[in-house]
Image 1: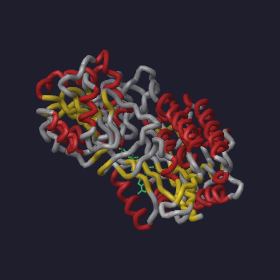
Image 2 (image 1 turned 45 degrees about the vertical axis):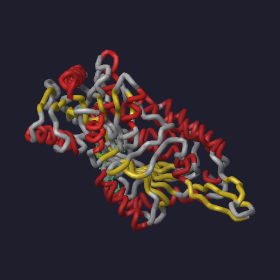
Image 3 (image 1 turned 135 degrees about the vertical axis):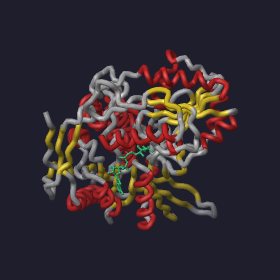
Length: 481
Ligand code: NAD
């Protein structure tokens, strides 16, 4: 059965698209065609931004509501999404290959948690604070919503990454135009249904499915107050340049090539740490920006670390993303599989030792599968250690001592995630402080809405989430009283 949508969600309604262009969606596990949705054209983006602006400027509208009233609306949206978590998970799994054992929890429930967290921040987020002037007299500082936010997201965690944008943006009183990736548009329709069911005012949320061109048009649209982008470093760099020229605020969550540092005192018993190690390195078939894809192993335990990762990788059931036993599903598309296979070939040609995987799993001749693959004896300067592969491919790199581990971890153009594995959490924190990155986990890694999210170097600019997430979507105005 294929899903067919003929309208776009703009201004709180289902409206006919302005062009007949469509986006065709495929099942990553089978290659089958599973859906068709309209592709937004420039006129649709104009309509979406105009609707969002009307909603923003309505004197009795969303941006004028008391924080408690907005918090209640976010709670309602969270409840509607929670009721649809299974459906969303299933659609995401079909489109991008995320195993169904994970997708209702990750893609279904992360947005629920993010909304509830933002709603919980609102009662303590001042709109106006009075204070004394330093030089005498009084001041008032007012935190105002910015206007219409453009939220542009990739296909790997489409609902989670959308929520990182709309939840704080809406909490602050902004309105939003979201542009999902063409690979994952079906879940965006379920999200729109939740927005309607939650009774958000028309125009507060608008969705324009489309590719790079329509994203670029949205970024430059004169009606946009801020751009919140997650995606590749290449696209992020263009968006940063464009926003620089326009003097438009922007946040960029980009690629990564994070290090998982295994210390010499780490417990490598897979029955104890297998799940955490999997989550930190291979989750979502390696299509995870913060994954620790460079495994840094001490010389004294190098062979043991290689054996541990080989055992982990070869124990993971590979299969259809909708099979509840699957831990490694397919990659999102044929193009992505070609890319990952190209990196595997490059790793071999550059002299890394292929320990396990490296090919297509036997018996899975439809869909875009690649075996979980472990390379050992990897030089940190080599291509597979420096470039983001975005598939189930890990590189194990030897280090001599702690200083060497930190040096290698930081010898990267990226700085997004990372982890330190040790029996001594204090030692782990000491090393974690020296890693140039946005987030780092000690013996594990599950992002949380209370933790600011983002990167340094080529991994991006700005932070999402965390206790100050709402401030990122506010302008500050000072009143001299
Ligand atoms: P991509 O940059 O190709 O596309 C991301 C989104 O941006 C898509 O919606 C795409 O249509 C749009 N887009 C592309 N070029 C654009 C442009 N010039 N102007 C406006 N919009 C544009 O990335 P992708 O391949 O879809 O996603 C994978 C990348 O996302 C990886 O590099 C990954 O590391 C990164 N990512 C980062 C984070 C993070 O939090 N830092 C999270 C998830 C994914």
